[in-house]
Length: 433
Image (cartoon, rainbow, N blue to C red; front, side, top):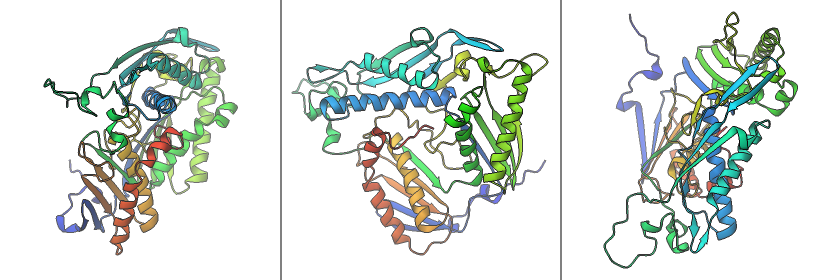
């Protein structure tokens, strides 16, 4: 069998690109466009266990940061980017559903438990935040009964401090998670990268990518769910486009208390199918869609996607930070992607968060400037300046003459990276759905 590759997947020759370098900023221009022949796009909705894990981790980080800013004037060292959710169990039947075993919430990570001599009520803060988070998504949950929270926290620092019997130094790694004062928060005077890592993004979104986001956002919108209270939030979309033909598979859970019978379940599926087809027809008319909904349903065996609260987290499925959508809200294996988990990381200096968000912003601004497809890669070196990545790579997928303006824009955006922190903490910038 012969496999024919699209142009977008063929190896590119070195001379396909023209390099423009200014310090550590590399701008490549090429007339090789991103392949428009086919693409694969996935999105996990806000009730998906992986999205919930991302959301909880980010919510915990914001709540902790806001607390320490209010009480001490600075974001203390923390990270909750290893949060995990272990699914509970539920009983569902037409007209009724409830949890029989709780959802286990594993709050894994590290957080400063004091600032000088003042203790921080970390466990209380995180537990109450987790309760509010889940009630916000699933109002029928009883936190005391339906959530089993495990706090697996550490104050151990990463490698970097070696005992040698000498006097403790200001800002020593030893006090990373037990700061004596501002002297042990070195990022206040000099912002630096916590890790050697990569953040990346691209612009613009394709029509398929826009369609996937738009459909999930619509189905999970308060107005849509108010009119159709049967629809659950654990909506997942997988799309494959070849030319103008879009094949889309959608998983849509239904909430048992609003579904009286199998016939009602089938009618709801058909209603959702019609809505999705209409959304695509009205907003993405150039795409010819073939739609598949709840492909695992087996009506004869009475195996259907019927749930108590609208998410598979109620019945054994697990969620982990970093396994879901990237910082732009999509999973796009044909595009630049970083495996870094952005959610739950410290918003002050964790490049796994800041550089992925910054790459999104930078890609969009470069596209606005040039009007051409662009890919952005920000590569950090641990301990080096946050505003001066080790390597910044911009790929313009079209010939563009005024490269100097691109390099200037890159420098401006990098200087502005610290502003991302305040936008995240004010919840003006969401990175998880």
